[in-house]
Image 1 (spheres, rainbow, N blue to C red):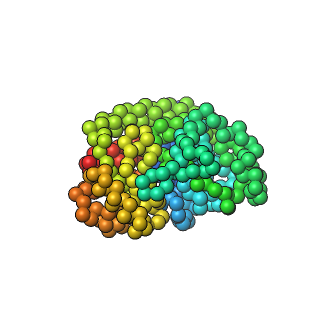
Image 2: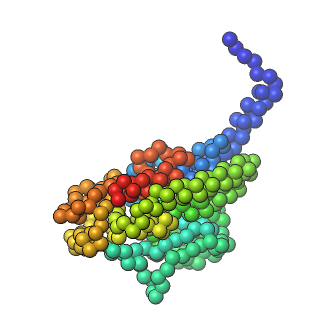
Length: 345
């Protein structure tokens, strides 16, 4: 049986369709950041994910559909070139007219220096060795963007988080100062919700109220999650564990739960025999009871480290590759890290 819409109902449908059509196209680099953007956009629209779940963000080849999503984007959120240096050129080529939000450079983001070697020595630049807190540091005011003074390629109208980014070529630029796994701090995730809401509201003022309400709700959820994770980890404080690659120091710092070392310095290189020997010595010296692997890496490497020890093994995944992309992925990712540690320890 057919139903006729009342005139006001028809008008509401048309207005809703118009509002939906006006929602900006949004592209996001990795699944955890995509999750935060999806949380802010709930009830309004959905962002596109650029790097497929489970793939390494450090080295990646765009699929045609991902390249198109980037090309169509009016707004791009990414961690920054420290994590995905290859994406820098893709953004310049495909999303030259989009507004680009570099979250690692956004206000309120805490950055930690890279750690080197198997047993975590901080990465030194000159005589400085520190964790840099950007809270209160407004990168949008750096219109001259001195870091890129030597960059020769002009991109008129290319807006990087408020800059007229006229000289944007990262070739040869050193992005090695800080650990790029910044999303594993719930404090950074909470700060980014505000940054995301502000950027979306600037692009889509009609839905600003929804964006900021969603961001506020998301921050409350992350505060509750912090309490939950602390309760999971509290009985295990003081236990020693080794991670597969050094991706977790933001999580370690947030919950005061430090790892004793990392088998591999990054997910792009295999550890040397000397590094494995160093980790084996640490396992023995500190009575390490847990060695965490990751889904995409050779379990034989972990087995070689565990040889001759009574340590158990578990799996940690900094990207949530086994989770469904969307608003729920980010909190579940952090929760899963705590659960994996608790089960292994």
